[in-house]
Image (cartoon, rainbow over all chains, first blue to last red):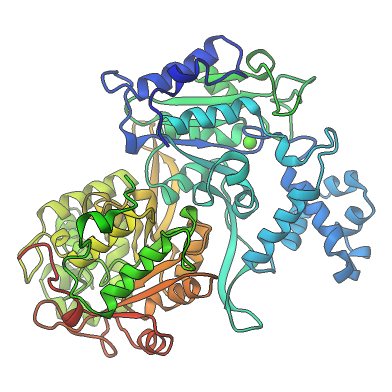
Length: 316
Length: 316
Ligand SMILES: [Ca+2]
Ligand SMILES: [Ca+2]
């Protein structure tokens, strides 16, 4: 339910953010967007906010969590695939040799994704994600992966929601992986999750009931220049607020910035090697290089995780 | 704003529907869906309703309105295309020879659609639709095309909205054609319009600003088995309420029907040759044949336009 005076009521809607230019900038944008007499006012229907997921709303180290799910799925599905024991890259996964898996590069990764994400119907896939989310644990924290979300960003999502923003995830991750838990964890319903997708076909199950079959073929890659294309396709409106963390978000930020009136463009910069991870220009996961230069040049908001976040995760 | 007691307040939320089994069936479904103690109760988040557009929410005769837009666009764009004067199917369009245009079949129609719907950026296209909607008139009524919407269906949309349903259009028409006017005419915002789409590319305009360029290539055909696929892709939840008017809606209705709990599947049957048009099994536009058989066999709701609608359009 919309609470126009949310900030005034609670005193501080962003308690996990340290005071400073970043926090003040976010608060000022939201205040002006919701003040009809302000030059920064944004009409209700145009309050569209888009967030990248990996590295923006939750962690993405030591590797994308969805890829860890895929590795676990290979193990779970192995009994039905005896040939995997002697076939790369599956043999390396089953042997627990992550280095060899990563050495297989994009091609090996794509094989693992296809084998674990397609060939079943949409309901079976969602169930396998839900089961994994309930049982799997992050290798460093020992916590469920859905605990590895950023408390400051949860507060930001709530602040935007309370002020009438409609929030979308726009992620390179696959859409049905996120939809299985996005509503519970972020309060973002399935219909506001946009991601990479596989070709899906309407078919009949063994019992004659209609099913949607996931095929081993990429439908849409929601990354880089694909992000503004997906925003247009799914939302049909240009966002006024966009947050990412890597070069894969650059075009989404550019597209958001190019509209008229008040806009907010933000990047999470991973600077905290102690509480989280520190990486940017040279990282193979979540590389932040060109987008960091453009953000600096155009005075977009850059969150310095170490400086700006009082705490990182919801757990102590 | 949600008004749980909408029906009780107004006495009759569907004044343009004649009393009878169809009207009573709709009212009963909505009443039960919103009554927590009822076996037909539907939790708020699952109140997803999907509607076909052409022939379900507005008329589609003497031909799809979007195709009439395309023909008008050929004339508007002709000065920049002198070669069209001597090239089929454009020469026939410019000569006003609709019969010859239709004789060109699907291939000619596709050429006309591509020439008028792609090659520009998304904002230019939306502007051309808005300009057409403001000026063009239906050949029979002399009214704007957006007046040719069904008053009983507008009342049904309002009733569902007031009872917490999130309403999507799922149409074979192209998505950005509908988004240009769906919010004003139906109260359905752009992000709840799903349709056929063209491949779109992130690019730079002449002034260096980012643009989304529409390419002369089909991205997704939102018809027949494509409809449940699109529903999964965009919404990620199975609807509980679906309304169509032709065989192109059959799989959407089957997909809706196959879920657990209370469901509503409806078809508009065009039976009123006097106030609207009468057509079904033999029509090339909006053919209703297999879906009519299945609706009858499975006791889905079939609206007999002549019998069930007190009035057809909002105008007298
Ligand atoms: Ca990211
Ligand atoms: Ca139709």
